[in-house]
Image (tube, rainbow, N blue to C red; front, side, top):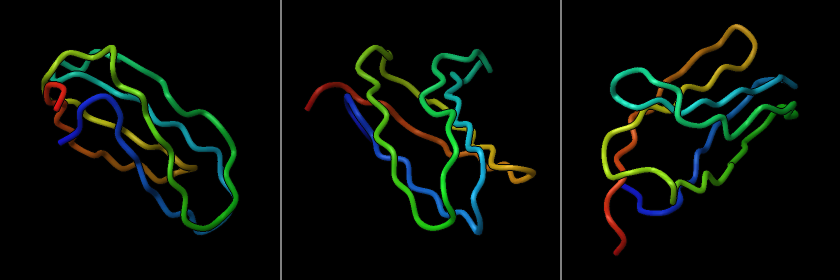
Length: 78
């Protein structure tokens, strides 16, 4: 769970273009926080989500031919 921001971590085998999109549970795109080229290795990006309502979201990461989804739960301010 996260409140106004969350950290998304990922590892790349080699230099790749990375796209991260955030979707609500209905499949509607609500944010496109990352679209950039990253070198191979371990990476971490912070997604500022203060504009989102409480609820469940899906972060979809695409790096080359690899795709991965992460379930995220936004809770109220703590």
